[in-house]
Image (cartoon, rainbow, N blue to C red; front, side, top):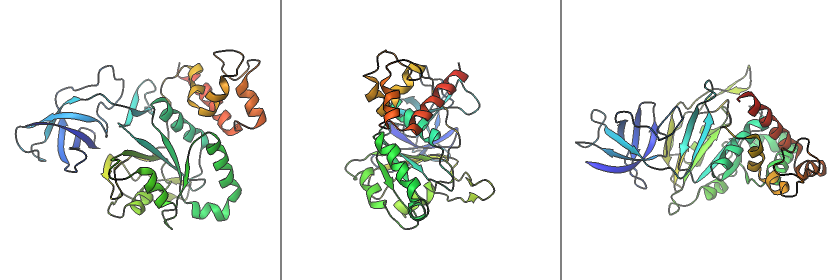
Length: 316
């Protein structure tokens, strides 16, 4: 018995596969030492990977299928491993859109963290939408900060959807962005721990039951509630990959001259720089620095860029 299927759950050494667009998950394990050619990642198989499998009988928990080949990916999202700076971890593969869930506070947003996520999406050609959750709180308590957030990221060209898992606000807009059953999109939901991602997913599709965690009052940091990478079918259409809450996100290797290419607003302005390549830090006639001075590139995004240049030096 042989076939082709998509990885819908990664539990380390064990996986669940389904022959999308149908939903019929069955267990599988890696056969031998299947590895991606030239891969430096800590996980050779990621949720969203399309694989070929074989099994002598109908797959079951006692007789799982064997994954024999990982087919070429159209894209994947990678972060540098937390403790192994030269290795990377594949978050998910074959993604049609990434939804990056954030909050202004509770936990407090770290713009450089969000910007690293956005840069990585740009590197791998994954369209990104920012989902600003818990907006029912922020509109009342922090209207100026809310307006600033929109200014920063809509100026950079990213759509921002305001949502509230508590009130249901923005859920219809989010469903529309995910697409219809006919679209059959595979979307990634990712964000820092505590931003309400699991609650938002359950509000988006009540048939799903991802774990919901609490905020640590001592540090206003979210507790980890999702330990596995898993894909779910959505009643509104398509499929969603739920990733564990992320507290650290290291960039993959980029040359310092390349980093600005993945800030869309900087890339647009850089065509008018006097020198090429330009690091946009000290060169005369730099159109990016001029745009920052004039406010067409936000200082917040520019400071994130400078931080990435410094981070780049540490890992060389």
